[in-house]
Image (cartoon, rainbow, N blue to C red; front, top):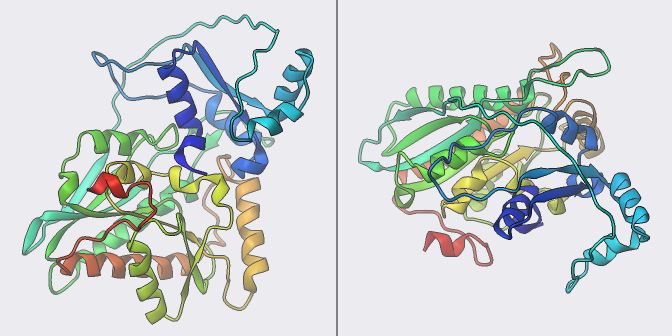
Length: 361
């Protein structure tokens, strides 16, 4: 998947083209999460940046329907699911459906403030050049009750664990006997779950200029269980930061692996993406699956269980069985990547073929 397959782009483009409404058809196979995740995230008030006074276009109505519901809609129009297959082919043209939809809704707009939180360790030699570690501190709050009646979406793994990792990385850099030559920033952003808004706001209003920002290293959940031999890079072949990570994993007796479902578009689904859109090389990692002593099948099952049972559900809460042994190992790798960046004088680059390379230039 490229960014043009993401739901955020589809809503943006629909509005730009003047569409009064836009409904995205959810495919669990392509998205890698069930429709219940969409329901939990969207059956509530929606957030976006305060753009009063700016020429930003929106459709009047946006939302989602499940694939089975879309097929029923097609059948009502005298068509069938083969239309969806045709839409996947190059050259497909929109087909008007001889059906109409009428709806009304009462809308109340409320203006509130939420905050990004920034901490820094000032560089000793090149303080104007910065490395940004990021994680998001928000989750979904109170929402649709689950089957147990619990309606509090704690977000313990996604992304309290990443925020905790951010604090530990800051602690590690602060304890260094020799301070970093470049400034190291620890950025905890808000409103990630509703469209990466906190990092979008930062990218549009950077505290530190983009051309002086060396790299972004982003965490969206860290390994809560056992150590793994591998660490997963999301977005294979994007930037030289991938090579930086491989170098330190080799020294630690580990290895870099890559996401197995790039069609799910994970590289466009967390806060590093807004840095990438600003031309800043961004590294985004996920927990490996090659669990030491237990193998890949065990690790894959653990990942699948979280995604189907706990992702964006009230059950994403602290569990006393969590050891974070694997998470600590992964944080060490991210620390070593940042440490190298903090003491060298070169700027990592996007790789050939990356859609973001031209933005850095």
